[in-house]
Length: 202
Image (cartoon, rainbow, N blue to C red; front, side, top):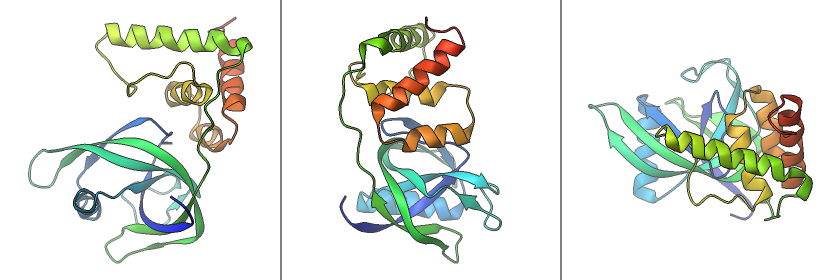
C-alpha cells in the first residue's frame, strides 16, 4: 500500500501485531456490514487499540493513531446476527488527520502504511529468548493450543518479538509502544530484558 488510503476502523481493547491471529465475535450491525463488505470486495479493515470508551460505544471513544491492518481468513455464522471471524494482522499504519464516524457508528480514517520490519536474524545475545519462545510453542501444542499462525519464523527477530508481545502480561500502552517501534531488533531486546527481569531467561 502506498500513499494514503481510506479504511474502516475496528477499535479494540487489544493491540494487533503483524502476523498475529485475531478472533472476533461480531454482532453489531456496523461490523456485520463491514465484514460482509470486506468479503465481497476482498478488502481489509484497520484495528486500533482503544484508549478510552467502550468497544461498542460511539461517544467518548479515543483510540491510538497507529494500528495494524487485518485480513479476514475465515468467517463462521452462529445464528442470524452473530459471526465468528478469524483475521490475521498485516502491515502497520498511521492515521492521517482526524478519524470520522458514519451515521451507523462505523469509524473511517485516512491512513498511511508504516514500513514493515526488515527480516533480521536475532542477535546472538538474544538466542535465549528465541529458544524460550520455541519451548512455549511446544508446550502450548502439547495442550492442544495453537495461538500463532504458521509458518513459524524463529530466525526472524521481528517475528519472535511480536509473538512474545502478544502473550506477555504487560499493559496495552506498553504493547502499543512495542508494536510501533520501527527497529525489530530493538523490540526483541526490550522483550529479552523483560524476560530476564522475570527470570524466564538467563
